Length: 136
Image (cartoon, rainbow, N blue to C red):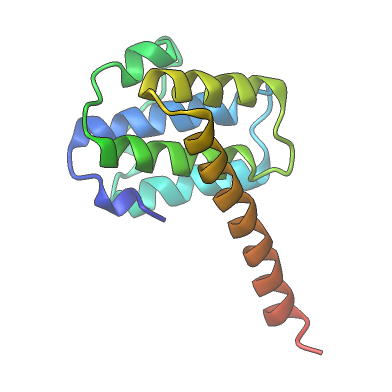
C-alpha cells in the first residue's frame, strides 16, 4: 500500500526481511501472508530472484539504522497490516510489533492509532469484497 514510497534498496530489503520474520512468526506462512509477501515484492519492483531471506538477523539488527520517520511509519503500518492478514494476531507477532514499537520510539498512543487504522482497513476490505462478490 505504501511501499512504493521506499526508494532505497536497503529499505526495501529490510522491509522484506521483517515481513518474512512476521509471516513465519507462528511457524506457518498462511496463504494470505504469502500473497502479501508477493504483493510487497511487486509493489517495490523487486523480483523474487533479487532477494533471498536467510532469517539469520535479529529485528534490532535489521531496523537499527533506520532514521527517517516516514520510513519507520511505512514499515510499522505495513507490518501491522501483515500481522492481521491471517486473522490471528498471535503472541509471536505481538512480540515483533512491540519490539518494533520500542525500537522506533513509538508511544502506546501512536501504536494504538496505527492498530486502530489497520483494523478499520481490514473491515473495509471485507466490506468491499462483499459488495463486489455479493452485490445483492
